[in-house]
Structure formats: C-alpha cells, structure tokens
Length: 118
Image (cartoon, rainbow, N blue to C red; front, side):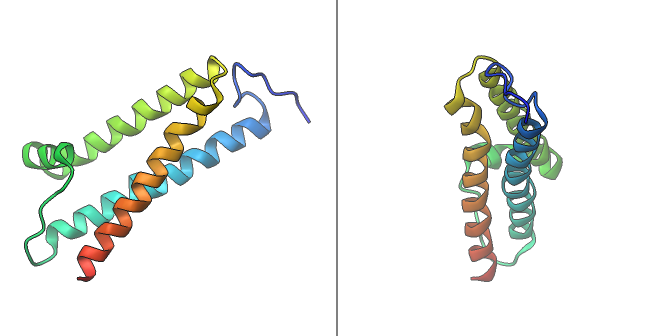
C-alpha cells in the first residue's frame, strides 16, 4: 500500500479512488438527481414555485441551460475547493464539499419527487 501524501490525498491509487467515489456520489445526487427532478417539476401540472432563489433566477434568465450552467458552476467550484483543501492538508475542508453537495442533492431530489407525486 502506498503512503498518502497529506498535501495531495488523491495522489495514491487508494486516494484517487476515494476522491472519485466521493464526487460520483455528489454528482449522482446533486448533479443528476436534483437536475432531473427539478426539470420534472417544471413540466408537472400544477403550480410549483422554485424555492431556491439562485435556481429561480437561473431558470428565469437562462431556462434549462442557465439552470444546468449554475449547477455546473457550483459543482466545479466545490471540486476546486476540495482540491485546494487537500493540498493544504485541511481534511475537513477536503471532505466537506462533496458531502455537502451529496446531502443537499439527496434532500432536494427527495423533496422534488415528493412534489411530483403529490
């Protein structure tokens, strides 16, 4: 087993696998799950207003493309923050961005599904 470099936790095969796994979970929930369920709400019958003001503005000004761009920007910014924290050996800040996005995405997706089914 390779020794992990505290400045670059993803620099070993085990660290790289962990990094990818963390971000795949965040991508599945925040990226795919929230985007798909939000777009499903946009076509669902009945009055449903967007609760997130940033998403509401993105949808109002850029439509679906603006919404996807806002999500992409947030995702890339979170990855940059995680990588910067990893380089500085800030363990909590390294793990926090994908964890927060995963939790927010899971909550938003679940909430959106409940609204679609209501």
